[in-house]
Length: 289
Image (cartoon, rainbow, N blue to C red):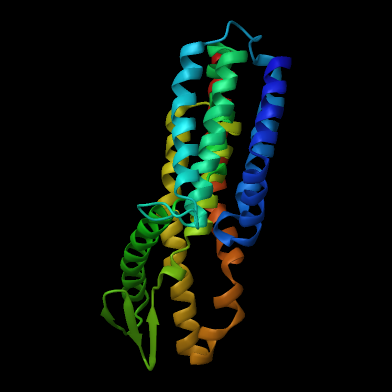
């Protein structure tokens, strides 16, 4: 373990300027503000289960090599296509540069784990190690694709909610005409940030509190439809307020700053299901004992 700590320290110094840039960018960018917490969560998970980690074993040179190669490739790609670097095929955005560079850092960190801690240790710590992937900012292309998908799905849910509650409307794609007000489900309304954080939360909660792999998978799979339903419900509430209290409600604090309220509401069914599964597993453990 001591050799790995020395290696990790040297790696942190070598990537220090990139990681500092990454932290500053994350704190200024709403979508990725959570990424600075990920290393601390991974460290906590390792510390929490430290009693069951195997002792450091023989290093796996093959495992280290298989990770060092993509780590080197990602770093070279990021530096060659860095914004303002004059790359022949166009420069990366700041976000995509950091995604590639942080991905490179993680590859080398994992390579050091295989080299100094061994294959068995890395297999035992697979979840905390893999959880570090959430340090990587989502690439621009992924963000764009996810937002468009969420907008399309949310529009369908809004259509269903309006029909269900009797809201008179006309629809053209993701634009809804209600009374004298036009509502558009724009990319800014996709809820990508809250959905992404909810996805990470579901993974972490299922790992900490559940043992059944099917229960874990169901908790994580629930996040996507739950996020879409939350977005549709938020638009329904705004539409009802605009109809019954006036069009000025579209510029209310509930619209512009109400995200945390609806995010908290979406946690309720998630944690209720988590509690139910945990209770089922606890009862099964008592029966077996």
